[in-house]
Each structure stands twice: as structure tokens, then as C-alpha cells.
Amino acid sequence: MELSRTPDVVVIGSGAGGASVAWGLVSQGAEVLLLEAGPRFDPSVDYPQDRPDWERRAFPQKPGSRTRVLYGDLGILNADDRDLMRWSKVAGRDVPVLGSARVASGGGYSHVMGVGGSTLHFVGEAHRLHPDAFRLHSLTDAGVDWPMSYQALEPYYSKIEHAIGMAGTDAGPGRAQSRDFPMPAHPLSPGARVLAEAGRKIGRPWSVNPRAVNSRVYDERPACNYCGQCSRGCPLGDKASMDVSLLRRAMDSGRLTIVSEAQVTRLLLGKQGVISAVEVVSQGQKHRVETPQVVLAAGAVNSPRLLLASANAEQPDGIANGSGQVGRNFMETLWWNSAGLLPGLRNSHMGLPADATDWGMAHPASVPGLAGGYKLTHTTLDTGLNGPIGYAARLLPGFGAEWKAQMRARFGSAVSVGAVGQVIADERSKVSLDPEQVDAFGMALPRIDSVLTDNSLALLREMARGCREVLSRAGVEIAEETSNWDAFQSTHVFGTARMGLDSAEAVVDGQGRSFDHPNLWIADASVFPSSGAGEAPSLTIMALAARTADAILAG
Image (cartoon, rainbow, N blue to C red):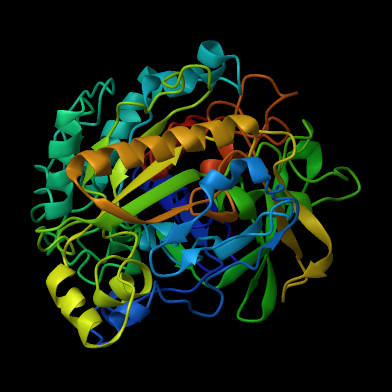
């Protein structure tokens, strides 16, 4: 299938949503053309774990593997919130100018454009939303409800879990499963065992975190070797990133064609509100690809960007924007992390990242007086405390012979706890098009506005308290704390083309279908009405996309 041919469905984006909808479609006989703006990554060549300087290398950046993102209103840092300031024993307090604007740092919006999308650098956390997450407004009077229940999505959760391979004991409290996971749980790492024991003592139990990482050979992929470097890319293929799992299986059908480094620049409108074609630039040439059905799965920043950039005389505010909600309701991820050293602990740099979780507050009405909840997770490995450079830069001050002795004695004793919390959509937070700056294809660059509300700040304090409490009970001396109070930094973002029952308030219906264009579907985190209470979104994106594939084929 070439770009000049007409497939049954064109899918834009190959991350969790695009890969899942493509797999669902070809599994039932459809011919699919998948257009990915980013490049291909070769796990055996591109990932840095076998190099002496591995600790200095994050997930590789290739030309075209990141969108340039601009930032607008990120909120003002209030002096009353200075207790949320980041600090470390080595660097001291990173004191911002109170009263100034919050800034984007550490990459700001962290994502990957490439075949497999951001699943290439995720650590494999794959969570079902709590059933209460679908009823946020009903339970808290904040935000909105989903146009479906947990029970409606449960069969798709199970389908995806068995397709990609999930390891664990269960999906978490309250998350009823129709089938057990196909693989047993991974063993807990030394740091996770410390937190589980501390949690037991304070009445906050920790459990094995469900992971899309093989604990045994599954789907022709090997078992994990516990190198702890999932976020740098998995060279073995045991982590179920989309390139080695659903996309590989979809390619085996012979009905999927993937064109990488193919930037879609416009959706073209035909008669009666139908999307007649997509405009795509590939190998320096502009192409028009006609399609009966279009699935947009470019993520919660690039999907609204493309919809807004496709404005025309009939749709001056952008494609699929009759509600005026495209780009609105942007939700970043609320996060806090506390880390320190535990005398006598050994080998905390070994194991699987994010291997244990405290789900006790992970539902939307869990914190009295606030909307939204949070989870606690073991984060020693995924926050970079898996090598001596991380210790030197953050936890162990000093220099010379005495410092070297400290490093030898204390390396492997770090323990880190992260909290991930819910952000309630706010009218000030959105993705829009910059009026002046464009990319190499002439598309306006996306601009993010994201403001933390009073509810978010209060929830962030609760998250900090939870992290400190479990570390204190474990006997850990805290040496570093970070959060997104003073710096916008988010991997998971949501909500910019949300689903709903009312075309006046939502962009797509509960199947992911545009209210304005009958052959346009959206299958990524932009359709989330709410972000969940700390759950990683990949599994829910995949389940929704598999459901969308069924709806497309049902007509």
C-alpha cells in the first residue's frame, strides 16, 4: 500500500492509541495506513545501556522525534506555597523568584515522536482506572463524568492486557477483572520491600504494581533482566512498547502499512462534513491521501494542534471544533517526589522501576474537602538513582577522599517515593496555536497554558505528606524533594478533545467519534474527560482505542 492508494482507514500517530486502533482494525480484516511523524528506533542500536556513559544518556533524541512546544501562562509562584519548593542536600534549595511565573523545565512536555510513540520510553506501568474515576463530577461536583462506566471498558482492558502481556497479582483495589493477568508478578526490588514494610506499619498497604513487562517469555518476547533502565528504552523487547508488541503483531497480518517520518499537516474537508483526505509531507514531498475513515492519535498536544491547524472557510475555528472545546480542558500530571538514604540498605539500584504502589488514596473523593486523589509509587530507579552520578549530583554532598568513602559505603541505599495526583480541568489551561512561530512544515507551533489551581496545590501538599510519612516510617533520611509546583514538567497530559454525551460540551462521543465529522475518530489521551487519580494512562488509551476500532468496523 503506497501513499497514492486509498486504505480503509488512515491512522495518524503510532503510540498507545494509534497502535491499538490499528491492531484492532487489521485483526478484523481492515487495510490500514499508519502515518507517523517521527522516525523508527532500533532497540539494539539506539538505546544506551551497553555504553560506559549510560548514566549520562536519557532516551535518545533523533531528528524529528520531539515536537517543539511553546509555553504561555503556567501560573504564578505564590510565597505562601514556598513549602512546595524543590531542594536537595547537594544543590540546596532551588529558590525561584516568588511572585514570578512558573517555568517549563526538564523538557517541559516530555514525549517521543517515533514508531511506538511515548511507549518507547515509558517504564511499563499499565493501570486500569478506578471505577470511581468515571464518576468524578457525580462524586465531587468538580470536573465532568465520563460517558461510559468502568464495566463498559472492562472487556477491552482485559483484551489489551492479554495482547501486550501483563504481569502482576491483580489490577488494584476495586478494579474487578474478568480474567487474571497472563503472567505472574515480578519480584519486588530491595527499595520496594522497604516501602511495603513501612506501609504495613502505618496502615497504608503497598502492592505489586501491574506492569506491561514480561516476567516470563510471552508473545515471542523474552523475560525482563531487571536492568532497571526502562525509561532509556528496552533493548531486549521484554517491555511492551508498541513497536515490539501490537504494531509487530499488526504488521504480521499483512494489512498494515507504516510510513514513518510522515508529517500530517492538514485534515481536508469534503462534502457533508466528511474528512475527504489528509495532507502529509513524506521525504520532502507533499501528498494527498484519500481515506474513508481517519483516526487521529497524535497525543493530547499534537492532536488538538492538527485540528486547529486544519481550519478552513467552513470551519474557521478548526476541524471538529463545533463545541469550541478543542484544545481546552488541558490537564497536566500533578507530581511530588521525595528521596533519601537508608543506612544498611543494599542494592536499591537493582530491580524493576515502579514495581510497588500504594493505591489507598487513588480515587477521586479520597482526600476530604478536595477533588481528586493520588497514588504513591516506588521511584528509586525511574528517577535516576540507579548509578553513582545520581547520588553525587543529588544525595551525597562533598568531595575528595572522604566523599569517595561515603559513595562506596552508601551507594545502593537510596529509596525514593513518588506521588502522582489528579488535576481538575481549568478554563485557563489549554493547548492553542502560536500566532507567529511555525515549524519546518509551516504548521503553527503548539502553545501550552497550564495553571495549578488551589485544589491542585492542596492536593500536592497531601501528596508530599504521604511520601514523607512512609519514608520516615522506613527510617529514610530525606535528602531531596521535587515537584511540579515551580516547574511545568509532565509526561502524561490529557483532555484537549474530550469525550462526552453532549456535542455542545465535548469533541467526540463515547466511542471516540467526532460529533462534527462522521468519519473522524480520536484515540489518545486528549479524549479523557478526567485524568484519573494517579493511574498511568497507557492501558486506558489502548482499551479506548480497541473499543474505537470496533465502533469503526460496526459502521
